[in-house]
Image (cartoon, rainbow, N blue to C red; front, side, top):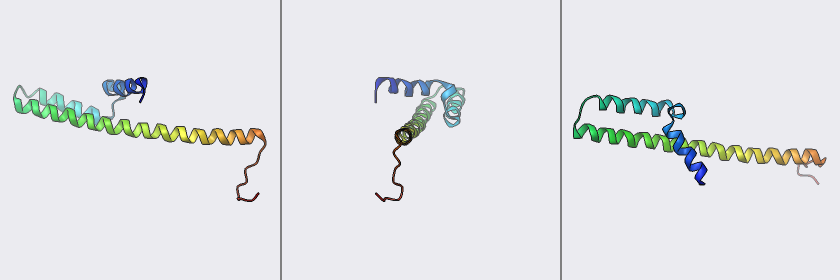
Length: 97
């Protein structure tokens, strides 16, 4: 992963407008727990919730990366088809030569 991709992943996680509804709900629960007061048990709960949010973010980022790879592969196929069409070569769709 290049530095630019890494920066984009992290910026998605900290930009609320790019968070998924699930990530936003976890943030909301963290805020609710924080409003309960100050206690080591509550602090531990917040740490666990933050870990859960990070795991959800890991999943979302992995899915987006997978979709990007699939999109790039599709685009390569379409580029090859365009080249064939522009060159006038007709691919043998039935396997006959």
